[in-house]
Image 1 (cartoon, rainbow, N blue to C red):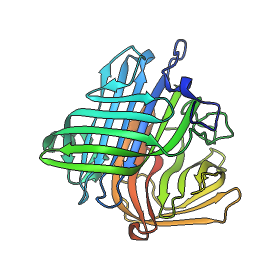
Image 2 (image 1 turned 90 degrees about the vertical axis):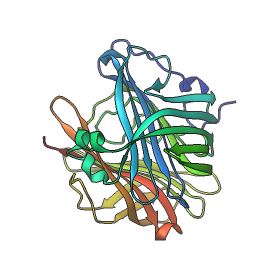
Image 3 (image 1 turned 180 degrees about the vertical axis):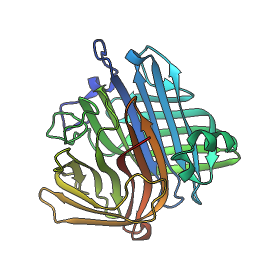
Length: 325
């Protein structure tokens, strides 16, 4: 039986038909964070068959502030599964378990801010190390959607994907970078799967996946419409397993797309049936990543966040900003 509380179930875990959609993207994404070691990761594969390539991203936040990073494209007109550049993401038991594996090299980048405007130079000059990842994601919640059960990724007018679901869980397994190996046991994790037309660089917003010390999990997204109106979405999952729809997600920040950010991550979350959540966190890692199209560019300031020094909770967040150049 599918482990779901939305319209998506086991059948949705497969890949989907893409004919006739020129900017089609089907992607799977998993993040995880161990608050004790501060080892975290973002793993993503996107298939762009109508554009003739697949793309893979591996980003590990390492203790001490450095990151291990690899991102690139491979020629592909297939949408048969999720494997690219040594990374493979395979659903083993639909809606319940996912296998994550990677065997390739990564660049160890001591100063992640260099990725913002000198990404190629930073990657070329960074030491290359062998990396192996062998993790299993196990679901902690049913599949869910965040925008009125219609599957759209975002609550606003931007179109990232027409179909999309999310799930909280845990990852266990091993990660090796160079000569150092970490073992993760039930590290907090989050995954999504989306498919349909994809358009980057069209919005200003913020996103957060957080796990609080009492067992509460939060996924929140907010963006500013061209009119200036704020649109919010997401859910809060309380320790009893109840889902509470987010009605407002406000982030107080002056971040405008710079390579570095020295502020805090301060957010207010309002959800149906819950008191106001105030999430005030210090930023441990800040990684500026740039997505470009033919005429636009988007800066994704990705970060790991500690609430109350990690004693109140932790999270993985993004600031999304259009940039020039």
